[in-house]
Image 1 (tube, rainbow, N blue to C red):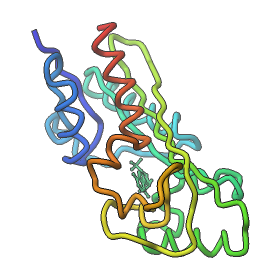
Image 2: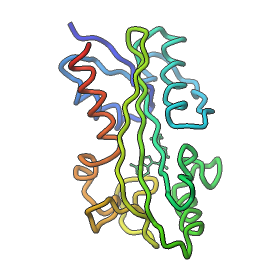
Image 3: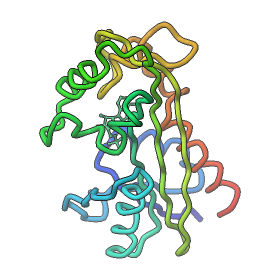
Image 4: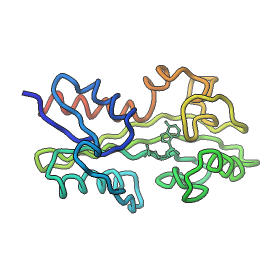
Length: 194
Ligand code: IMP
């Protein structure tokens, strides 16, 4: 029989993608489906902490098996900033343009442009906590290129590529991305151990 699991997200795109991957064994539902309309606080100082906060919130309040993800862009020359603050790097309005402009300014004249996207997935199932991590290494270029994707995609080139994430077809980004790699580990775990 199929088990139900909550993905603590309101992002329909992410939900659909993961539901496709887990389709045989799990019915994946989102926050809306369990009537969770409030904004879940993301007040931790690490990706692990924030991912766990969201999964715990759902588990404690709704008593359901749940997983959640949190992603950050970690830039080596900036001591891994913006990291957990990636979405609101340039302010609470969470503007992707403003975030990229701020990052490019901070990196002006810096020779080390190395960066990585890191995703942490926190899972609470049968009362146990588990973490899965995915990363993609790359570098930050000096000006924005491309119109696909979102967030910092126009200024990030993955290692081994010449195009930014915003220039690559989405299907290609989705096979090598931080999120895809973390989710693959989650899927393998759920398929083999539950
Ligand atoms: P979230 O945890 O998936 O909401 O990601 C937090 C922030 O990291 C987003 O608001 C974006 O600024 C950035 N981010 C996450 N994933 C990506 C990506 O695939 N490309 C570019 N930026 C991303």
